[in-house]
Length: 361
Ligand code: KG4
Ligand code: ZN
Image (cartoon, rainbow, N blue to C red; front, side, top):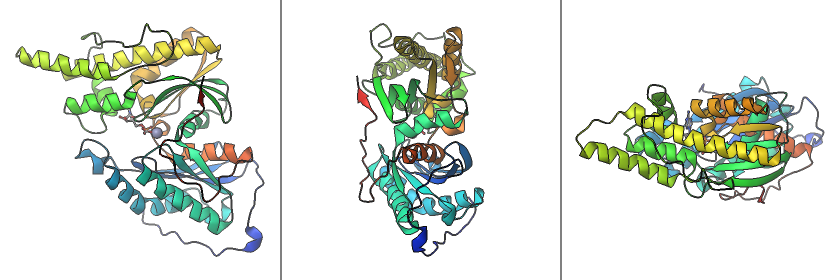
C-alpha cells in the first residue's frame, strides 16, 4: 500500500445528516471481520470505485491459522491507511461520502471492533449515517456487485472459512436458511486438509492449484449427507478420511501423490455442494443460483455448479475470485442496500461475533 495520510475535515453543521439516496451516493465500506483489512468506496450500491485489501496471510502463515490477537493488532495498523488509499483510488474525499458501512459480525470479536469503531467514528465526525453490516449478507452482495443483471430472488451458497450456508435470498434483507454444515465449514476443511498435507496457509487456494495437476477419481473419499434428505452437509468425516488415507499409504511404505489427494478431496466437496445446492434450487423453484464466500473462488466448484445450473437452464452468478474472499466492496454494497431501505445502525451498537443471517425454516 502507498503511504497516504488520512486527515479528518472539521465538521460543518449544515453538512450533518445528508440522507438522500441516488445513483451517485458514495458509501465507504470497511471490512475487518477476520484476517483481511479492507476499505472500499462504492457508488450507487453497484459500482466499485476502489477496493483496497491488505491481507494478513503472511502474518498468520507461520502459525498455520489465524491468531486473533495478531489479527486485531494488524487491523489497527492497516485500517486507516487502507481507508485513505480507498478514498484516493476513488478520487474522493471524506466530505464526498454519504454514509459509512462496517462489518458488525459475525467474525472475531477483537477484529470486528477495530472496523466498527473506526466506521462509527468517521460517521459521527462527518455527520453521515452508519450501517452495521452482516458479513454473510455482504458476501451475498458480492454476487450482485459482479453482475449488473443479477438480482434476488435465488438460492445462494455462502461457502467460506467460517460458514457454509444454503440460503433462499427472497429480497434485500429477506433470507431463509435452508441448510448448512453440521460441523466444519468447507473452507475450514480445505485449510485443515492442506495443513495436514504440509501446504501453505491459507490452504484452499493451494488445494485448488494442486487439484489441477491430480486425478479427482484417484481416491474415493466419502460424500457425507449426499443421500440424506435436506440441505445440510458435514465435512469432519471427509477430513478424517483424508488423514486415514495418507497414514495408510505411508504405513504401507508407498508414496503419497499429493496432487491426487488434493483433487480427490476437492471433488468430494464439489460433488456434495453441487448436489445440495441444485436440490435446494429445485425445491424452491429458484430462477437463479448465487455462489459466494472465499471457497467460491475454487475453480472446481465454480465449474461444477456452473455446469449443473446450465443443464437445468438456471441462471448462475458468481463473483470474480477477488470479490469472493473477504473485501470491503461487498460491505459497501450491502450497506447501501440497507441505507436505501431506511436502515441506520445506532452508534452505540456493539459488534456481534455470532450475528446470524436470516432465520432457519
Ligand atoms: O470468505 P473468506 O475470505 O473468509 C471467511 O469469511 O471465512 O474465506 C476464506 C476461506 C479460506 O478457508 C480459504 O482457504 C478459502 O476461503 N479459499 C478457497 C479458495 N480461495 C480461498 N478454498 C478453496 N479454493 C480456493 N481457490
Ligand atoms: Zn467472509
